[in-house]
Length: 334
Length: 217
Image 1 (cartoon, rainbow over the protein chains, first blue to last red):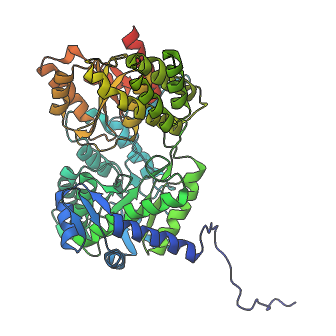
Image 2 (image 1 turned 180 degrees about the vertical axis):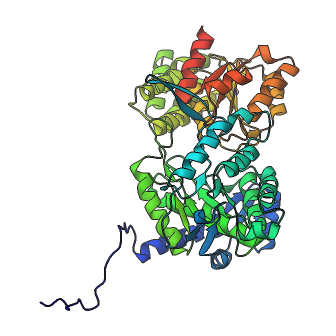
Image 3 (image 1 turned 45 degrees about the vertical axis):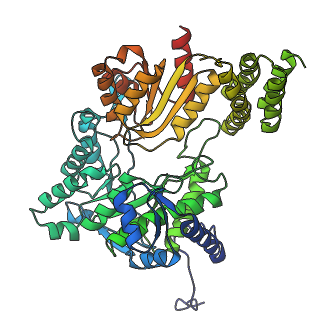
């Protein structure tokens, strides 16, 4: 063998993969989802949302608030949803892409409501979190190379009942990290204030605030098969402002969805796609993630363990669904 | 068929999750002009409480509780109109407990589990549903005169209404007439203390234990 010998056309695998489905398997889930959306529908508990779906060609019952979304509208919405968008940080080096089948990024998650304070001498005290804790977490994440952007980790509970907690959380986060901020607890009535803050950051330049979103938002459909007033409004306003929205379902298999994981994937899929359709109706091309924190429901304790083995399986499955639809995917992880 | 036999069959029907058997006992008891209140208390309720004890011991799970409750309801729903005709009541048990998800919030699974567990423990539970305006909960407290009222919140943005609820109860002069209970993921004992609620429940079991202790002294 000489040093000049090479392999003829060698294929190689980068990283690790977990392939749960064949193409036919994914199609089965997709077809079942379309069946649910078009024949049973989703409940949209928001008047403006109902009217948007109706105008777009859906069968809407204003009394029961049920919306049947036809297949063509789902496919059209998936065609307009972007396969890539950028999350901007105050510092350019912290700006990153979210891309269909792109690189994997990490964020901290939440929203926690308490912190454990170290008092010294091996003593700890757990108390409700406040604005200072949030600021400190933001600074810590700013330093941590392994965290790519900042999701709201703890709540500024000192503001509860005294002011708009969620707006303070937005400002405090922006002030204390130079990374992109993902607001995971947005309140529909205050989205306009988050936007005002973003525009102020860009010196009043709303066009730039839209082109380079310094923050994004996350909403959960309510399982099973409902878009609440808050979810519908955040999706619509996010779409209008050009703020990326993470439509993230947290179904609980055995609690708010089928105890069978495949059945859970179907209703989860329907919930997320309904949210994505709404965003695209309002603003075709609006950036969205396909999101999941879906897990099991612990039937012994009545809780939703986000560390269950099934969450790992579901997250892997949902990633495949999101990839099938050509979207950037956000899933619950470690 | 003695009263004791009927009671035993009702209890067994609940513990076997047998809706058909539950209905049969109820019908037979009505035809035999048996003591229907006793049947509910020593039959159906005894059955559901034993299921509840097995759940606490982690030998049975939530689906068993739901199935047992369904079996019980089939029987009790047949007996209730007969009791009303005779001007009787099945009794308040441990007391009336009003429960709902607070204004602005639509999450209900946890609250519904608490409602079932409180019913199993012997409370007369009125489940008002979800996204209930604070003023409507206060109105219900005035009209139903419950022993306790529980509000659930799952979002940091809606738990604020639990504070508003406490304030409105005071304004309306009924705060000291009811035990207030808060629960839901973002709530804590600290929040409970801050807003002046009486009880903080971390989960369904915690709620039942604390409320039974409070009521029985």
